[in-house]
Length: 40
Image (tube, rainbow, N blue to C red; front, side, top):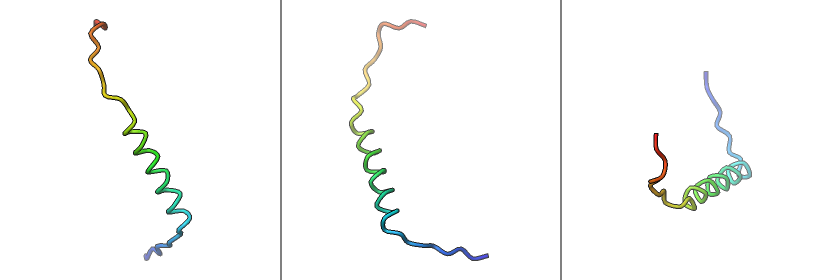
């Protein structure tokens, strides 16, 4: 069984844009601070 790989620039551009947005969102997350108030 063979699989044909198709190339679509518009689809690739859409996925690349979403990946850039996701990476930027991760980069924008502030550093975590230790919680000194919560007790378990």
